[in-house]
Image 1 (cartoon, one colour):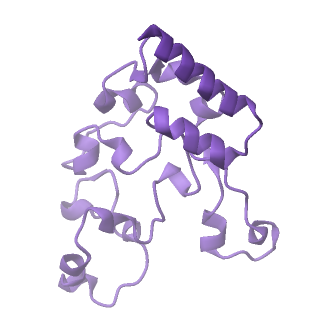
Image 2: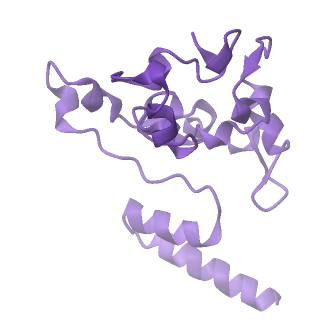
Image 3: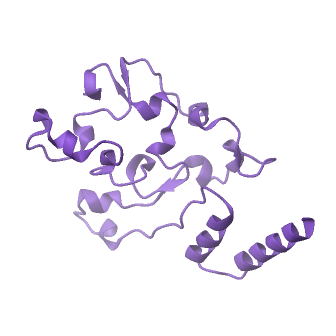
Length: 175
């Protein structure tokens, strides 16, 4: 068993040290580890162009502070294989202070499921969201059911224009 571990580690190290491109490195590491952040996306040319649209401005790679500073131990236990220093539902609150003092709290936040919406390492979207915000809510909320609500008739734009994604004193997390 020990020989197998040494061979596997040596093989991975050989592949990684061979100077492979970031995409290949990501693919190899993803085979062995959960939560490997994707390779950095390059900023589109439109970002440098004056008058870039909101969608073009959104596509900008960002790294979460601890990840960018290579402070992996802030979240990961160095003595355990891919383990976290706290349970997943408590981890974000060791740095991010969110007072849950509103009447209505969004389900993922109430259960400590920050990772349902946010990427803990990096993202090309604002607030480290896992996808574009204009369609983001429909990963969990049924689009047909939402559109069928009379208050949504003819409304274009992002859900967060009217709804707070974390909590509110108003029903339906209205702002």
